[in-house]
Image (tube, rainbow over all chains, first blue to last red; front, side, top):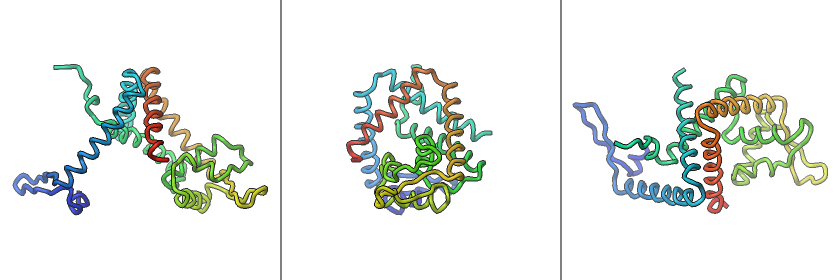
Length: 76
Length: 155
């Protein structure tokens, strides 16, 4: 977060009463986020052209399962 | 209310990060248990690639060992240097062409490769218990497709 703030992507809003820190995207951060969304959208579209709906569902389920396995092992 | 699963709205890169970490963490734990916890990033792919493709005495061309990693020549050379320095690999010049270098696993490297493979096998087995064979095929097809999508821009 320090790096993102230092490089002008976000600003931090500190609520001293609630002891909470909120992050606010700056213009530079919004532009970066939009670029990330656009890159992801292009790859997702290409993936949809190459795979069936069942394969994409399997891809998502498999990735979720791997994430859950990681979480369950961390709890041990 | 719909029955739409929560993960349908999670961007694939986010799901991929958690999934990748599951293998990375399992491999790191297995290597630490085997006393082999000083392998650089990408080194695991070199070691397991050699373990599966070469016999104990055979040297593999250094260039072939790193080609699938998509590293620059300098980064690939540094990775092999580190693995040789840490005694996971043995390197020698090809007797038929002294300009080419060959590498093979040392005993230390074979132990590490076995620890990596054991961790991957255990995770694969855990995964097979959570999803169906068709879903697993979808996962593999999806990951392969993502790799193919990357290639045109990577080359």
